[in-house]
Image (tube, rainbow, N blue to C red; front, top):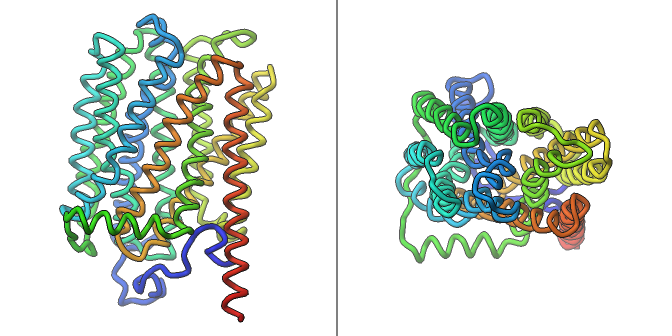
Length: 425
């Protein structure tokens, strides 16, 4: 299947044409020197990023009660963090082009964990939202830099698997952060809960810096604004990349909306679950860990287009199942939503890294910006839809987003066929 069918370019740069078996290629490969250390270090960075970024999501009902605000107001503690990341991911990626991936990732984690230790002391919702926005902006140095690091340091044939492991770290961080905060908050309140996450993130940040191998293939670029804007224009002019950016945003719109609102739904009738149990619901993130880490094999069997269809279809089925007033069916729905989302995200993000022939950090940064704009939009619109129409409103928003994913993938198929016809002619 042509890569154009999913928005991936058929040109991935000269380095990508080097066979994995070529001994002259000194980049890392599974089983080779440094690969496990690198994988574990980036896995831990993913854990810290998602644990911090969504540390308040499972606690929104408690934050609403603590500050006397509505669900849509409390949801800004999530939207501010993801919005801050979306706004700053491109500038941070430019810094990584100049100062190095590892340097920027280390500095980003250091600032984010420091702010994380201040979050529990926020005296008002406004201050909490500001701190969360700063935290999200700091975390912006992680996602795009990590993908660029992998694209430079890992052999092309192992890239989808390597990025899948990083995304798996995201799922573990998101899961553990929500489960831990749920049980801690039930006993000691939401402030202690987010403080515990801050301490865990400190440990992940230290281990990340100690384990991550020094880059061997990084070449410093320029911070000249005109050159940066030119690189961004190049990427946005590529219709294949544009489709991938939109697909990432739409997948995350579903995910952000569902997991921002699900806590409110489960505290209401007919479920009326306590906070600790609601936090444990996020154990379904483990499904995302599996689906993300096996994305490479999924693409190998179905192709990227087939993997995106499967991810979108699985997510849509989960949304429909979650409409039931049966807790087992709701849980099954969340499992399907999580599996479909993480598979789709891993496939789309790895395709971006392969497509870019230059400015890989900026290409990944634009994807991450679109992705987290989708998260902010999903959190806000999903909460508003829940306030207006209940859970069915949130599900409706998610289904519209998945329809967009399917439409864009079909457009990729059409573009691939036209490319084949044009080449044959």
